[in-house]
Image 1 (cartoon, helix red, strand yellow):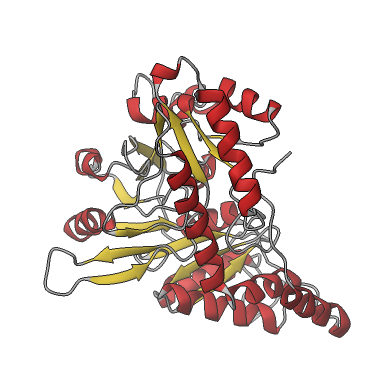
Image 2 (image 1 turned 90 degrees about the vertical axis):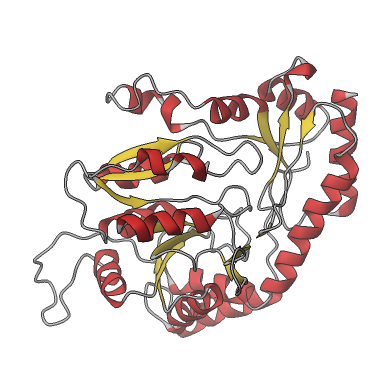
Length: 377
């Protein structure tokens, strides 16, 4: 079976982790945490990084930094992982949804303006499967209405967005450095992995101070074990940071491998009838975190059946996200009643992604493509 993801761990990662073990710095303090935070923030164009235990907790901390009041609204895509909506709900807010863009599968930025109300506090663009959201319209709305941008960059390590392309100073910027506060995941299937792990990035001193406190049980700097606010234990370990730092040192190679993978899949699959392949818009540099496919209805097959047939041929896959508006747990709470998002609904049923890990070989990629042809041709 060709796995949907297999991480690529090198000698440098082993060296750094062994250093943690030998020196005893194995918990949530140590030089690797500080260096990883500083270097990842700088890489993404932000001033500060706050390492946390995973991408979901990064979102929890980022939304908490806003100080939402009960009923405050945050606009986000329906086509995303549940962590995004949970972070809003757990912090007393109301998630407000927009549909997916039919080409990029990211949020349809053209729908955001109509969802802004007097209760809107923030917009949460989520970059999907390695392709950036079209951020310029979102940033303009944030400026116009005084909103905060919480940028979920969990799936776009190193991806870039062309900002200012309509003016005199076009400028490529890395995702995670475009909003007021951004979040990353370093789960095992990400371009950089710490096993489990995440980070909050910002250039706002007030946000970073709050995020650091929330991550560490809101210990007061002037008096330990004396608490005036409830926080979380969301710390990352020095050993995990060591893994991440070693991979950051070869980030260019990682991105090159992922872009090769995406382009190789596209070259081999583009002539197969009934498949929508990932796009790369002119204003985006895709990192192909996962290589997704959407089946056309002319194939008379949904993604679940497609996955079963590929698995029988030795190819592992994963389904696309199910929209937040179709999640039973939210419908039971009275959220998103009678809301319809046809693009997200369709791609959730017709979409899956192929093996996309950094350890994928060209021979394995060829086998995957041959399996796709056997099922569809």
